[in-house]
Image (cartoon, rainbow, N blue to C red; front, top):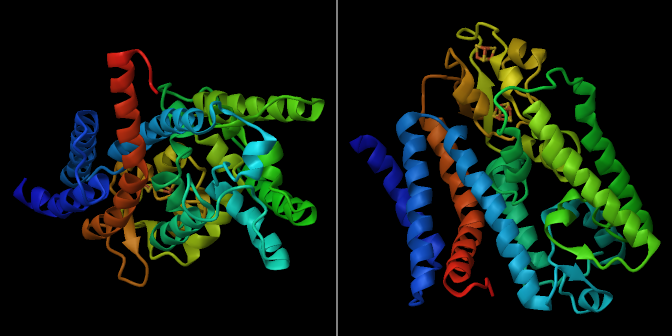
Amino acid sequence: MVKSFLLAFPMMVLTFVMLSGGRMSDDPKKMVAFAITFLFVNILFFLMIRTGKTDKYRSILFISYAVCFVISFITHLIELRGSMAISGANMVEGLTPFCHIVIPMTLIPAALTKTIIFPGTIIGGFASIASMFVLWIGASLALGRGFCSWACFFGGLDDGFSRIFKKPLIKNINLKWTYLPYAVLFVVVVTAALTLSPTYCEWLCPYKTVTEFVEVTSVKILMQTIIFVSLFIALVIVLPLLTKRRTQCGLFCPFGAFQSFTNKVNAFEVRIDQEKCVKCKRCLQVCPTFSVDEGSINEGKMRITCTKCGKCVDACPKKAIFFHVKCTPLNSTLDRYRVFFLYPAFLFLTTMAGNNIQDAIVKTIRLLTTGSMF
Ligand code: SF4
Ligand code: SF4
């Protein structure tokens, strides 16, 4: 107990600074939101350290983050421009928030034209392009594809739906489908370079359904809206419910595919101790992003799509799966590597989630006391 407290104490200090932004607000609603969020994240972190379980507590924060992000984002958009719908004038003014999923589509056009093919603000403002690039570079160095389970503000949605039913109704999914995100990535990068426009955002992003959308003023926009909503229902709600997997992240998202390559430069990985493994395949069944296959079990290494969520680590009945720091001796009994990973990962998650959770709490208090969120 004392050891767990001592290991968790630095996180309390760091999250205090992160969540308060260095100064305490004197608004009572913000003070309540800060206190609830601070306690919430630190209880989860303490339980991670104390119990040795990672995904069990990560998922609570990750899903809360996604729900609060949607509440905070939509209310913020309505405050900023009066509606969830975006108009041509909003785009000219740069009032479109930039999102990490656009990053792979911007790189070739930026090299060719020296401009970012997205109508957002470069610095300052709301979700500016520079702030998202800084976040992405930092998260990629610290987490690699762990971004998808520890930093992405959308990932908690399909993660949440995948946990609702106790057993999957669809069990066998051909692993060939896991190559689809790479095909989507290739298509959107090439089409973005050819048309100098973010084609995934224009045609394929399911999350438009719960963030912002273009006013339907033409047949083309109507078609785009139908595609966004259909993909959201299929990939973020229905398939995660039926398969108990994160199907948007594991079978479609081009950013996830892109982010897999950063796993190569990241220091952390998840490994299997083959001396302890009894080949029960529990890890293969529970992995939400299809990152464990027969080869992983035989060779002790996860596929490059592993998001380091820790679900297989929690589920393995033989404690054969463990977090590992590359270039150090393999040792499945040392919990210290998991703690090394948890510090940057949990800090990223708290930094990203903290403002959204506090903002959603403030707006909920406002709704309960005044009848309006604004
Ligand atoms: S869950 Fe554990 S014991 Fe079972 S196959 Fe995976 S690593 Fe081996
Ligand atoms: S292999 Fe394990 S840690 Fe990696 S994504 Fe799958 S369940 Fe999560």
